[in-house]
Amino acid sequence: MGISECAGTVKEVLRDLRKGKGLPTCSLVSSSIGGKAGASHVTYRRAPLTPSCPDGTTQGQVGVIYHQGRKPDNLSKYSNIKGGATTAKQVIFVGKSERRIETGDYVSRACVGGQSYGQFTTGGYYTGGWRSDDDARFVPAQVHHWYEKVVLMTPDGADYEFDVTIDGKPHSRHRFSL
Image (cartoon, rainbow, N blue to C red):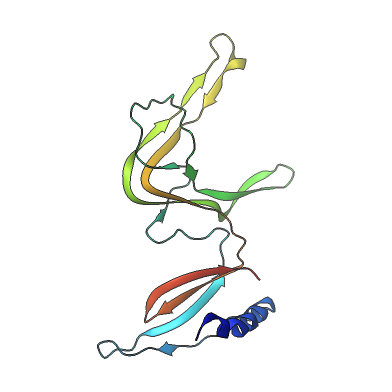
């Protein structure tokens, strides 16, 4: 059966989801492997704001700036390193005092994989201010880390995601909007 044969069923499932119904459930039994049958199924949930990291990568730490490729030579704390990807949580400001609250959702995910080529911290010093405190500016410390592979994941607007499991092993993840 090809994709065109499934179009009606997919449209029906999406219509049901818009009405608040869940995905249909079933347990498929595949041919036995070594005398044991494997389970195949689909599970779904509300999608997080930002997609998970792709296979072969893991999410980097919040606040660290990740770069793809080898770490440059001759870095100093005064180096001005451009670019990079970072993992950041969504922040909202509440009330008259605009209290800062992290929602727990990620507005970006820096996903890293392969070999680590090292890290370096820049900043952590004051500029100017030799004659007047008005000229002083603190440059905060920033941790930079270089990896073989860096992928930046950003919000894609998905409402739900579902995982397909075949023969008891994760097969694929799909995200969609209603």
